[in-house]
Length: 176
Ligand SMILES: CC(C)(COP(=O)(O)OP(=O)(O)OC[C@H]1O[C@@H](n2cnc3c(N)ncnc32)[C@H](O)[C@@H]1OP(=O)(O)O)[C@@H](O)C(=O)NCCC(=O)NCCS
Image (cartoon, helix red, strand yellow):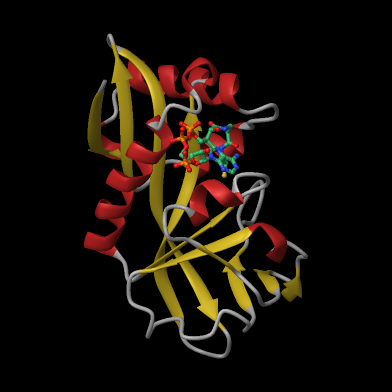
């Protein structure tokens, strides 16, 4: 199995089609918006015999921690291992490589997960403990998404307190 690190701009149409097929195999309810959210940053792909069998990407997003300034951080999207290969360390290898790419770009990363909290905790991620908000055209509103939010602190001084409010900018599809 080979790992490949690529910018979104370097992903050709065939790879994008293969990625969407992977996401549809790995997730029950993957949407076009979810796919859009995965692009615009850096990707790690695992290929086995030419087939894309795992993926993770990180894109720049502006977030606000507590009452601090808006900051550009890495936001991890579309983490998936092909179901027949799950549980063999492939997802971990992909995330370790992605976290090297994140560390080269941003002091902090965040992600939203449903059931994979333990997977990320083994990789150094921490659960967010504050309340989450979305900045919409109507104002900043609590969105109730905090339970699934996790943070990777490469520079802990940027986010010293995980109990403060965290705010994202709204976008089509899931805000977080
Ligand atoms: C979550 C996912 C990416 C993990 O990939 P994987 O290749 O199966 O994971 P690995 O085999 O590398 O697991 C690494 C470690 O995390 C653990 N782990 C894997 N999935 C886990 C989960 N859902 N919850 C808790 N721990 C998990 C493994 O037991 C392993 O632990 P160990 O190091 O103590 O042995 C994969 O299960 C998947 O694609 N799931 C469906 C899509 C999804 O939910 N993606 C995450 C969205 S945020």
